[in-house]
Image (cartoon, rainbow, N blue to C red):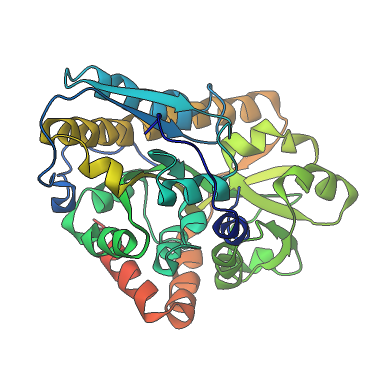
Amino acid sequence: MTTRPRMLPVAMAATLLLAACGGGSTPSPAATSSASSTPAATAAPQDPVTLDLAHSYTDTQPQAACGAQVIKEEAEGAGVELTIEIFGQSQLGSDAERIASVVSGDIDLDIQGASALSALYAPMSAVDGAFVFDDSDHMFRFFTDPASDALKQGFLDETGVRILGAWNTGARQFTANKPIRTPADLVGLRMRFPPSPQFLMNAAAMGAEPVEVAYEELYLALQQGTVDGQENPLVNIKAINLAEVQDYVSLSSHQLSSNLVVMNDEAWTALSLEQQAALQSAVEKAMLEEPACVVDAEKAILDEFRDGGTMEVVEDVDREAFRIKAEPYLRDNFSPEQVEVLDAIRATAQ
């Protein structure tokens, strides 16, 4: 908790650094909570507790404003003597350093992408597979359903870190100087993908020719023709002004970008039953609020592209053609444990 010294395990952070990387419909509140979130027996109730919650986002991004902030407000408003202190914008270290600190217990709570967490537990990478989730509602349903219990338990057993929930931070879309409607349109294009094993596997699954370029170098790579196109959520496309160097955004929604809320298990078990229930409820509230904020932000971005003529929006993408191509490839190249995660996710589709 916040009274503990923040000592970063250097060896683990170095290993994790290799894997760290940088809409859908609004989820239905009718989804039920996972049995894995049932609190365990703990210390005496109502002892005041302060937890630190770390992440890498700016205060105005949905992940912070509608995710971390909602967790704080809901948990503190439950009247169970919980205080959440938020440390955003990587104040407590990079993604790799922070998750290492969650493992060691120097950070209580963190917000991480599935691909970064897969450096600790390889089956987690399936969460970031192409066309694994249908939409935000599907992601919410999986992570609040007993179908996700095996993934959560496996991650807990391997790391000593508990998964409290997950949300979609925006579907990834293609941009290029021509429309991309089918897998055939990717042929001959050098498409930038993040330097992550799962993202590169997604590229191969969809028939793309991937080129690894850091996010910070993407604009220049497109401007200079090092790559022909790329894929990112709309908020990222807007943030680095890709409309200046790309003519088309094709709404493929081929992968949902994930955020998982993770917590050191010793910090969790030190909470009272009432505090555990309040914190879990706060996370599930954020699981609804954050994707809704993303939807609003993406609508505004698309309206700006359409009205300003800065980037042509291609809506008639044959997503089914991409999905039919991607799923067999993932099944053939996933480990048996990753296939189990894929099957569990698809079992909660509607």
